[in-house]
Length: 249
Length: 217
Image (cartoon, rainbow over all chains, first blue to last red; front, side, top):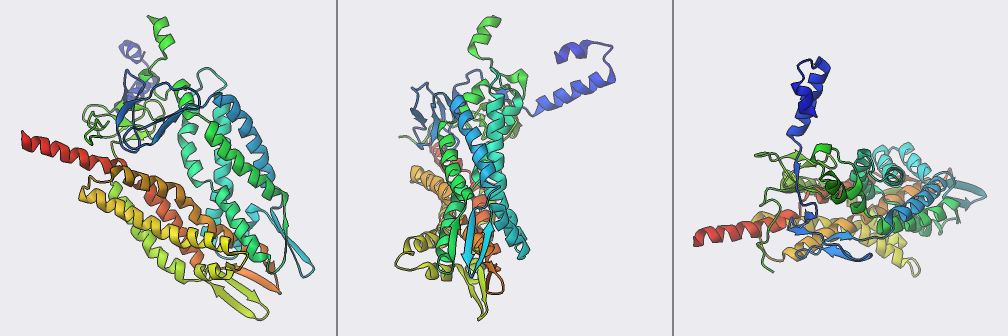
């Protein structure tokens, strides 16, 4: 299509600019392979094909044993259901008190954000931001990205922005540390129990459930299934699904 | 299994860390973009060993004050008392609390140091061009990747201890300067893991095989 515009002598300045943009974009874009089933292991770079396997079975790299793909049946619907549940739990976990303390006739409560806030007030701003990032922001991004992905995947051909969120999902998972935080809370409670009566808040139970849900999502969400359907960032390079290619010819 | 198996790099192909697609860069180009998800592509993570080493050295430097400086200071009417991570472990040690004490000891002291040693071992063996125990070395890398996040546990312990025990003037707890260094160790080692490219473990085997073939010919 770009070439058709180029041959048009009456191309406007804007059109000429668009042609340049496209060509520039093409310059550093890799070419796709005709065979879409060919992959390389991300841990050892071994070239191989991913075979079709029955639901529940996994494909592992023969050289380094990395799991390349696990066939997860009904991934979309299950992920959608669990992600919505995770969103509700996340909202509860971050709005109601998580822990309380009863000592010397006084009561004190804290939330996750409250914990980070107290660190900030005590002069540990950097650690405070880290705690906020690992315990509040990253899980929010993780759930938000998943939600956008499943919403986009309602369509037969999910739009390219679904790919953007799916590509960055790994980062949010690396830094989302709710399970580590819960262990930390458990240890802190044991310490404090020596001085005062500890009150467990609703948020603590919501967080426990959230950890279980996020682990469950991890085991039922199949990114490969989404990647095979999503529209490409560079539509010209796209390997068309087999049925489309046949329809064309 | 023979070590000299076809790698994507040998065939001039790059695989995408974002979506897993295999693609070919423009002729002569070392870097490109994934046509499917627009991720920047390279054959190997750039300056992987140097960057991993830099993060490791920084983490090792922070490890010393992280363990020597106090992470918590408890103020009571009787005075104030500061505890390092190790003192926190000792305080937790009791007939009922010892499993938690052990967890903190493991997560805060053993994991960070084991992580630094393991990554140093990986960097040095790759630099030396070792071709032995490749499968075990890549397994070690994956283990470091999975276990590493748990060393954040002490940061959370201190955060919630501080935020709960604010019973002025009776008793209050504030964070100590060691906490920042400890958090830095956790983040720096996580970044070291991210910058290490496990595919380098297999590259030297392929390189040696090629060299031997050339010498035979």
